[in-house]
Amino acid sequence: MDKYRKLFKARGHSVEFVPKSVTKYDLNEIVDALTEIIENNEDCAFGLTGGEELYLVAMGIVFERFKDRKIQ
Image (cartoon, rainbow, N blue to C red):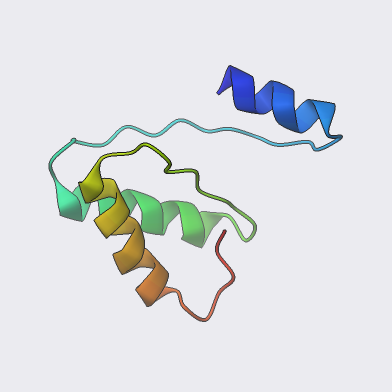
């Protein structure tokens, strides 16, 4: 988070990072966490590069559920 925070600050962006923990192999819990983030934040972005495959699957499910919203 610190690296991202410094990067965004250097580019003049004010960004809040909120860490969230999930059980690594619980697809439903991951989907629920991502859904909660989207529902509680009108403007949010996700960075999942280098993430576990299950997290990418969960993000795909969430993208489909919220396809009417612009999710980054």
